[in-house]
Length: 247
Image (cartoon, rainbow, N blue to C red; front, top):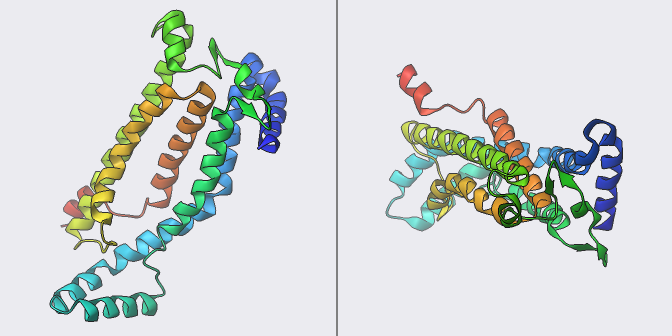
């Protein structure tokens, strides 16, 4: 963990001529982007898996109709189709799960008061008037919602709300498109999860409010990266509007 802290501090030294007192905050943003760039191949693999499942969804629908009264035969037929098309039912899930350790590691780095038994020096710096080790509650008590530190949080809340809205609208459009195209085969219980996941982006507002500012910067940067990354990786997936126009 101290290795990552040292890397962020060295990056802050490089950025200091440009960002001065906010160099550490800028280093956190840049470092988070570099971490996300490193795990980008996993995101690409996840996108390929999801697209493959969508491509096979019409055939899956036919199998469900054909073997509706024979669950064992349906399970075998689906497995045979996945094997034939060289598609794993978990292809879109496993890469995302593999990213989790890296995300938890970075979050812990930016939210822990002590690293390697020593005070976390990352939290002693500021972003404008807001200390990286403080929380929104500290900003409210020191200057109010629109004080110097409070305005930093207002900016973060606006970014999170905008990205969450973008994620929600895009997810709704793609789910509607999948339904118009004939449905999408999912693992048991995944249907409800897919509907809930877009709403979880709005829960990031709570996270930003309760964690130290350093961790909030990490969360907001990672969330924004994810939105841009998904828009790029799934740019060739149709939306409901596109399908309706084609029809």
